[in-house]
Length: 116
Image (tube, rainbow, N blue to C red; front, top):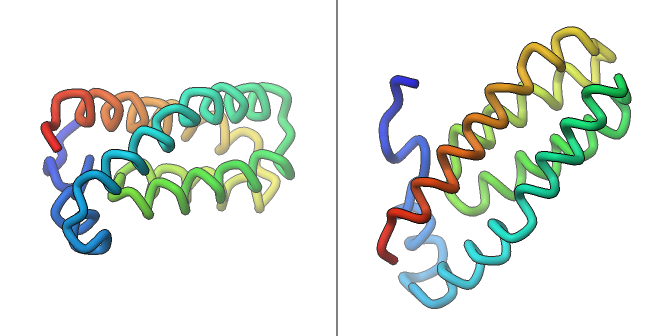
């Protein structure tokens, strides 16, 4: 995956929006990361089941939460899934899900390696 580090996690922007409160950033990230794997698993099940309606809702949630914490690529990947799900396109949803999962894993790895 050829990408800029800030596309994976834009810490500078996130810190700026949190008025450089590193403790707040850490707390929000911990909360986000604690729920992310479960959301990815739930979305995987919805994709497998072809449930585009609920997949659209969950992809939208992941998109917004990811954008809020500076996970730009993850947010973009969730947006692609949301659009496919809203269009009722199960095939496209299935094709794009691996990118979302990969971006989530890369984000989690990046956070684990980032000193805040």
